[in-house]
Image: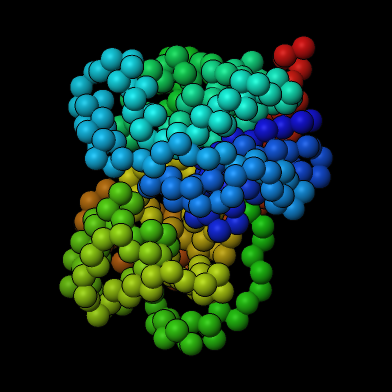
Length: 391
């Protein structure tokens, strides 16, 4: 098939879940499909400043077309519009303004879809909340596939989404919880659809202990991996862990990722900032548990990566996606309060056999549901269903 993949940013050095999902699917599907990436010249999702060169490039077997962003995002204006649309019911046009200001504002990309969209068998859009998807899907609705990457956050309640979610010809969801959330907001069971997750390769062998020793990482640690940010629940995680550490002396919290908030100085909290792939994999392979405090997720990739190494998880139970992933796999525990957190972490650290069993069950679930062969077969099956339905 001739496919277009529409995504707000694209590249090997782009940090973002939907961007990584798009690139990995493109790479894996390219031997059997003619794939063109339609994206912007932006690297940063906050400002959308143009960084990459405009025009056609290659990423291995994949063609990449980059379109310029007309203007950077005004954070002040975006905050004002967000206050309006999230605090009260607002007009359709005001909600459209939210998507325009959220960006990236790339009119040439939308013009390409108007002029050439029908030259593709299918056009796959990532992430409903960004302008290329929100304004692009209606232009090619008869051949559009949407991967919403929807989370249960304020944006999902915008009233314009009821109609928008009904437009595409098909849907690819990351988890059953995401599918249920979007169906409720659309007021219908959206079909044809498939829950595909994300493909994960088996882990490479590495000398984890030696790598951790070089970085002076203590043997008994729990891991947070990702951006250290209040939006990711890290303020609550740091609060809960300090309360835990005041009563227990058996673990260090290692934070691996860039910090977007103040991290308290504490002898048992170890912030590492950005880490190399080598150290990242060693941390995942050796942690006693992975902690995921995020209140909003459509799919936790880092949770899958931990299970890939047989490491159990301790997740925020207020996030339906995280709780659902952990319960389906029986691959960890979840918490809703500081007391829950303390009890669950105490159990994981003091019951090594049960901890290892949870990690093993997570790995077995990953083997059943998230290996590339399984994911790609689900994707191709839905592609075929949508294409047949258009004849």
